[in-house]
Structure formats: C-alpha cells, structure tokens
Length: 361
Image 1: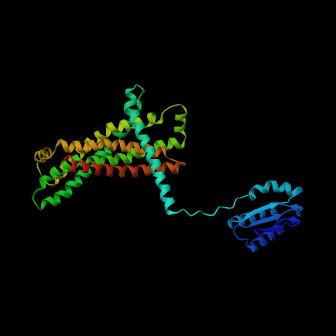
Image 2: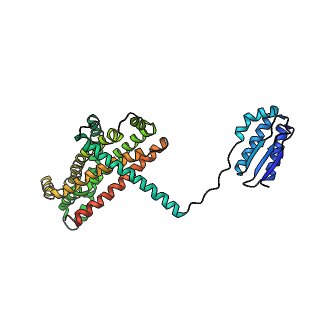
Image 3: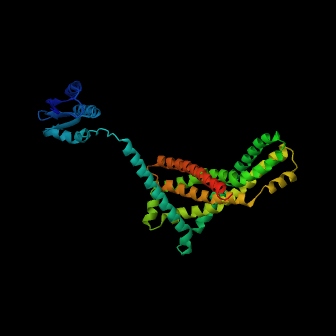
C-alpha cells in the first residue's frame, strides 16, 4: 500500500500527540508514501496536540513523505481550521538530471539572447545620439555637461597620476636594459612611441572603465531595481534617449582628451627619470622625445580611444538594464560590467594592433 493510515486518539494532547509522533517516527515511512491521520474518533484537541501535528508534518516533509489529516468534527474541526494550513506542503519533485547537450544549449540560447539585447542597445544608442538630434527629436544637453564633468574633470587627477607612474616605471625598466648598450637616451623614444600607440589609451581606458563604467552600471541598475526605469517607460520616455545617449556622447568627447593628458603625463614620468636620475639635459631629452613623435602613432592611439568609449558606456548600460534582484544584483552587475569592460578593451586593442601591423604598415 502507498498509504500508512493512523487513527487519532480520543484526546489529542501533549502526551497522546507525542505518542503518535513516536509511532510514526519509528515506522520510518519511505519516500513517496502518504501518511494519513484520521481524526474522526478524536473528541478533544488542545494546542499541545496541534504542536505535535506540526512536528509530524515537519518530520515527514524532510523525508519527502506526503501528509494528510482529515475526519475532524466539532471543536476539533474548528481547531484544525487554524492548524490545517501549516500542515499543507507539497512533496518536493525529484531533481531532474540535465544532460550536457541540454546544458550547453541553454547557455548558448542565453548568450544569443544577451547578444541580441546588446545589439538592439547599440542600434538605439547610435540613433538617439547621432540621428535623432539631427531630426529635431531633442537631446539632453544639460545632462551632457554634467556627465562630461563627472567623467572627465573628476577623472583628471587619477588618470594623470596613473600615466605618470607608468611612464616612470617604463623608463626605469628600459633604462636598466639600455645601460648595457649605452643607448639610454633612446628610452625617450620608447616612452613616446609606447604611450602614443598603446599605453596611454589602454591605461586611461582601464581607469575610466573601473570608475565610470562601474558608476554607469550601478546607476542604471539601481534605477531598474527601484522601478524608475519602468516609470520612465510608463511616462512615454525612451530610456535610451534619456539615460544612455548623454553618457555615450560625453565619454566620446572626454576620453580622447583624457588620453591626450595621459600621453603628456606618461612623457613627464619618463622625463623625470631621464632628467633627474639618468642626468640628461632637459633640452636633449625633450628633443629626443619630439623626434620620436609621429602622427600615425598618435592617430592609432586616438582612434581606438573612440571605440573604447563606446564599449565602456554600452557595456555599463547593458549590465545595468539586465539587473535582477535587490542590492546584491546591483553589486553583481557592477562587477560584471567592469570585468567585461577590461576584457573588451584587451580584445579591441588586439584587433587594432593586428590591423595596423598587418594591413596599414
């Protein structure tokens, strides 16, 4: 039989309830069975008896056994109206084994869906940032100035400091290697070429992604959790036009400026080591640096900066819009945005390096 049936005692109190619990506990009903207690013969029931019924239900629930209590009449039935809902539970379904093919397919579908959402965000951002203002559909110019101040002016000190220290480190390391060949002056060339092509752009973009990219993801994720994004949609406001476009245009403007400052700061760091430590005359070091400055190198660094700016903003916004849950979800999406930003920066840098190495040079 799949059902174990027990008749309730005439008086279901502390003593009889414990005895009934002990009887069922010793029977150890197997998983999938049903324990049925018939209270038709029970005439009196107090709170202690009800507590023991709850103990029985909790015990059977952990054993994945169904529990059924019925047949109560009179005052016992009235008491069961209060206790009954706490006794109801469903047997947990057995865990379903997920095969490797199904698991890979589910992850593949999730990736495709996310790529589709990201592609839609890119298209809408391009439209509302470039095309829509030309069509007279408006742009939040006041918000643009605020974003430029937050992304550019407030990031100026940390960007300059990081690039200065990086230039100092590069000069320090390269000078030690060049000392054996007596060509320490050419460290100025290495610093100039390195910062013009790669170092200033990638270092500045990493700093901005850790600062601005995280802030964008956290801001939009918080708005999404607090249903402010839904409120904007309910008022007929396009969230991409309202939230994304000012951030995108602002970073497109300020990131190249920050990279230019980064180049100068890196050169100052290198010059500090060359002039103060290595003992070169300032005019000699500066002339060597200027001779190594070529427009194609600077153009390469500045071009990838624009792509970096687009990626940082859109990745931050994308993760912000995808948040779920409460404050923990905001933290997870902020971390995810920074990780994706850094991964994106490295991959874009590899693509540009391959293009300029194999195609344009």
